[in-house]
Structures are given as C-alpha cells and as structure tokens.
Image (cartoon, rainbow, N blue to C red; front, side, top):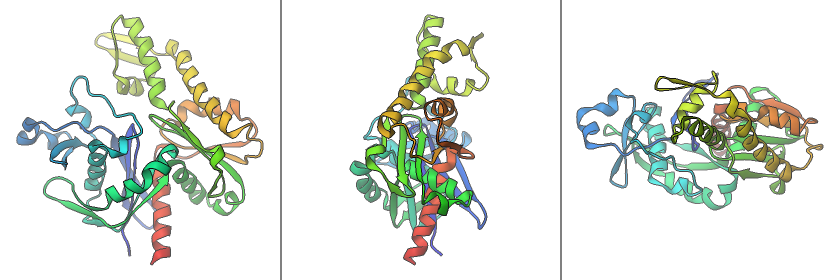
Amino acid sequence: MKTVRAIDIGYGNTKYVASRSEREIQCAMFPSLAPVASQLELSTGMATTRDTVAVEVEGVKYEVGPGARLGLKAHHARILHGDYVTTPEYLALVRGALSCMQLSHVDLLVVGLPVGLMNSKARALAERLKGRHPVGNGREVEVRHVWTLAQPLGGFLDYATRQGTYEMLAEQVNLIIDPGYYTVDWLTGLGLKAMPERTGSFAGGTHAILQTIARGVSEQLGVAYTDLDAIDRALPRNRLTIGERVIDLAPHGWPAQARVNEAVNAIANSVGDALDVHNIILVGGGARFYEAAIRRRFPAPRLIVAPDPIFANVRGFQIAGEHHASMAA
C-alpha cells in the first residue's frame, strides 16, 4: 500500500496529517514560523526542550514546530507575500511537518496553494518538494511524488466525504470559502468542476483583522503594539493582558468588522448574488470571523460550516491523495 500524506502550509499555521488509520485521519499543526536557530540553541539542546526541531535549508538551520514562538527575535515578521512558497522558510516548514510524521518515505505528498497562486506556482512547487529532505536529528524523508491542489478544494472534499453527500454535491453548484491567515480564497464550481470567473483570492484574511485591532490597541496604549498572536489568543475572551493592564477588545471589533466586510464584498463582486448556488461551505482557520457577514451577504444558499474547519483542507487533501494513489495502482 502506498504511503500518502498531506500538508497544508498557511501563512498562519502549518497543518499536516500525522497518522492515518482505517477510520480516522489524525491531524496536527504548528505555527508557520521558522526563525533561524542560533548556535546557542543548537549546542545547548534548547530546540529539543521547547518542542521544535532544527531543519536545514540551503546551509542554514531553522527552528520549526509547536514551540517556534520561543525562538523568535523581538521584531520577527511573518512572510506575507505571493512568493512565500519559494522561500527557505517555507521549505523549512515542510521539512518540519515531514519530521513530525515519523516516516522514512512518502509515496504521494499532497500540498495546497491559495487559489490565486495555482497557475503560477503549482508546478514549480511540486518539483521543489520532490526528493530527499533532511528533517533534523540525522534523519531524512524521501518524497517520491507531489500533487498540488487549490486549498478550498480540500475543504469541499473533506465535507462531502465525511457527510456522505459527495454524489449529491457533485451535481450542485457549491461555493467554498476559505478565510486563511493572509488571504480569503473562494472557489465556485459544479461539483469538482471549477468556474474560473467566479473563483479568486483577496488579501483580507485573519491578519488584516488582527492588524486593525492592533492599531486600535496601540492608540489606546499610546505606543505601538504589534503582537498579533497575543491578540488572536485573547479574542475568545475579548480581554488582552499587557503587563499589568487588561485591555477590553470589544470596542475594537467594529473597525475589524469593516475588514471582514471588505473580503465578503470581494467575494460578492466575483460570485454575484449566488442565487444559483446550492451550498456555501465555509472552511479554514478564520471561519469564525466571517460566518455572520457571509450569512448576511448571501442569505439564500445554505451555509455549512465544516466541522473543525482549520483542518478541513488538509483532511480533504489526504482523501484526494488516497483516491489518486488507488486509481494509479
């Protein structure tokens, strides 16, 4: 049996299939951060104690994994641009995910890209990820074949397969909306047949929301506040602790909502009134921020929020990869 695994590297988090049993796809994730590992950390074993692994790319060691935030310098910036997949940091995240899988080889690796990058980046990315990868601690993982899919397509396959409704959805027009960390992607299609003119990306993901809140917090404090991850973690409680101060985040919600509305309007400009759409399937880590605005803008179609939406794409990639591998056997 061929070994199939999936990785979904977003601007915010790296999601991967950790293991696969007959009944379950077990997923895990770590932040999409890859600080350069200092010699002190490598020599003292600090990388191990904070749940990361040091992986080498082009002669430089990067620290990746759940504890990568602890290795960040004071002014570390995430990479948020279309050439992200060509950077050493991206490859370091791939190798970190491969390391976590505890495999010696992967026959088929399925990875995702934002919709807007599929035409320009998919082929080169697949070629880049094929071959042998050093994954830290003297180990290597061989990746024999790579298949690249549009990220929202994974969410569609995950929902349709898990709910046992694939045959029904394959005959319907579906709009899959995937709010990620940097981009909001959407894909309109009849089953798996995409409608290119009603499919696209908009740079208005969770990062834009967090950045807007950070500006409001900065004005309140009188100093620049840029810890977007701390704001993200504080949002469920609407209380951000900075030193001895506790900031109420609720007043900063309305400016952030304007950024959500911008993204939803971009979708509406592309899709239209969606009266011919049977289902809207909402996936992705930012789903909670966009659900209410999508319901208001598109009241007619049925809105479905995927279970555990942050892993929907990577689960769908795994399902697609296993089907592809079985057909090629």
